[in-house]
Image (cartoon, rainbow, N blue to C red; front, side, top):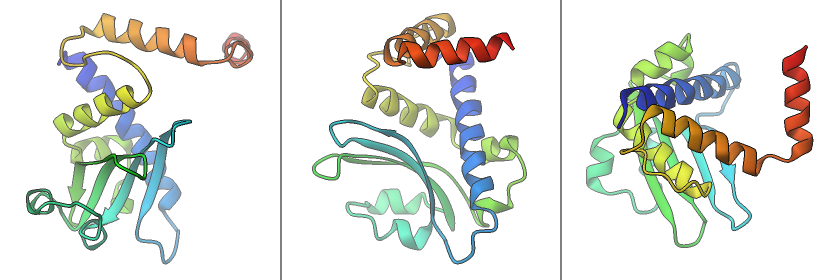
Length: 167
């Protein structure tokens, strides 16, 4: 995978993850937090969640190999249709709560770049983007994402974005 693509995916994902962490701070009694990244019309859901190890071990289909990679607190990527598709990705882990992180960079530092890239590839596939992240150059990646955004975003939303950028 192009290093620029990997870095862009990692930085963007870490930034989104940190927003979830900030929202979780101060929430009393909750141990797990999730950020839904995509919900398809067909019931497909892609999310990233922060779970304690004990909770992850209760997930259906968790293998011994997967469990061995867990830390006390984990960022888990999940793709499911709640019927027959269920994929888990260990994106990173800590032995202290994720709410202890102070910046997107600290979030990026605890993430596994390879796991994030694999999860993002599955996310793009779920969104209907037919692209092989392993073989795309940075420019090809940007072009593919831009094309998808233009195709998937209603004109009214694009107009609002354009007007907002002019101000």
